Length: 60
Image 1 (cartoon, one colour):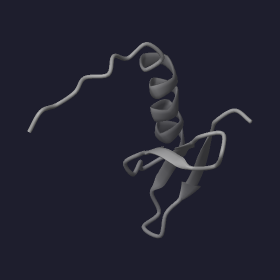
Image 2 (cartoon, rainbow, N blue to C red; image 1 turned 30 degrees about the vertical axis):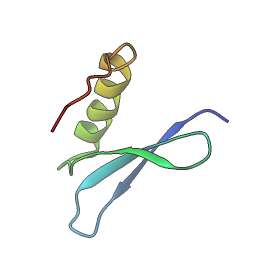
Image 3 (tube, one colour; image 1 turned 180 degrees about the vertical axis):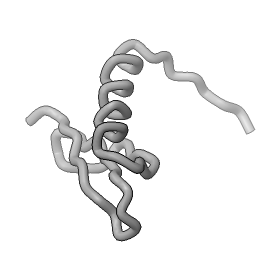
């Protein structure tokens, strides 16, 4: 099964989304958005901007 985005309204009335792996595990969560339109724009941004994103290791 392919991954998917789930979109919902939180208790505070903001729209949020999770990106789920094929096994249903949450692999990314959004900030809160004031509108559904902006939440969907956030999803589209992840889809468009991250397919070839590099992995950068941060040393502490």
